[in-house]
Length: 206
Image (cartoon, rainbow, N blue to C red):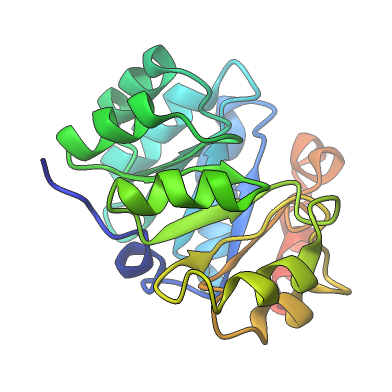
């Protein structure tokens, strides 16, 4: 069993990870070009749209300079598909010991979603170094993350859900936050219309 560190992968890019729900496969390349030109080299493509797995494969094959991950992975079947598509890390909305073991066995970093200390313990006891506080705004936000630092000194957080341009720096100021996930960087309406210049403007502000 090999436990891959998400923290090492995340260090390849900015401290904000774009969390992307691609409306079509045609958006994948221009979006990756736009975000990478602004210094974003770690991208999470969520399995919320039909083209997600194809997009992960496309970018994994054509953009070796980027770290491409799969988000909203909820079961072992989806985990297998994401790994086959080339995902270098996997993010789940919850904590599943079977999925953690599967990812460890296949050498892929998995970041499980947590809302409680019990879930953090499961992740830590399986050798993980990072958990996803989700949905961060409803799960206690920065107060929860701060409170966990003394109990879990080796665990870092990757908060998503309710993280915005207005509050992201509050999360990033915490020493036990490795990065934060942002959906605001890639609005669906802008992607659908191909307004890459406007997405570039948003990304440049981060």
